[in-house]
Structure formats: structure tokens, C-alpha cells
Length: 102
Image (cartoon, rainbow, N blue to C red; front, side):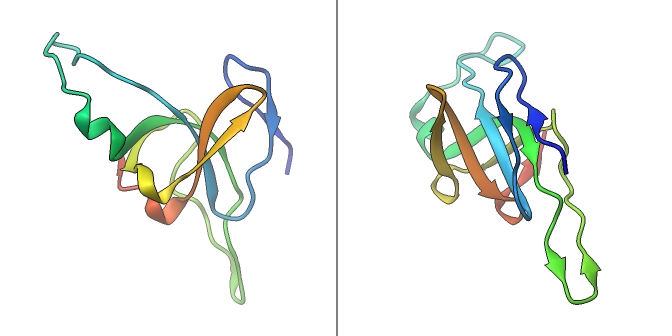
């Protein structure tokens, strides 16, 4: 599997198994201009998928991953591991922990 270039950084990473690399998107207002309080932002992670692993290798074959690079997703922040890569913050999580594709 080839390494994927992350948008806006040119960083090369390869996610393994069913892991997903997410770049957090912080929204202060909705598209309609409504202010959203930031206190919930510490509990939920909303972001863009920038790398996806090939899936888990099972006895009966490889499983596929449901999300794709570029998808906007939401998940509990506590289930993701924060990683600093070349000075930028990303989150790494298993696909099973993603709750929504927005």
C-alpha cells in the first residue's frame, strides 16, 4: 500500500490495519452563523480523514474500511490518540470508534 500525502502538509503517512488518521476541524459557528459553545469540543472530535488503513486481516480475508480520505467524521475524543507529526496535531483511532460520517 502506498503512503498517502496529507492535504495541506505534504506529509507522508501510512495508516495500518483499520486505523484512521484525523485532522481536527474546530468550528465556532454553524454555516447559518449560529455560535456553538466550545465546552463540548473537549469531548467530541470532529475532523477530516487524512489517511486510512487497508482493513483488518481476518482468517477469512481482509475486511474493508467504511471511511475514505476526505470524509468528515465525528467520534469521542477520548477514544483517539493525539499525535504530533511535524509540528501538526492529528488523531489516530480505530475505524470502529467513529460514530458518524458527516
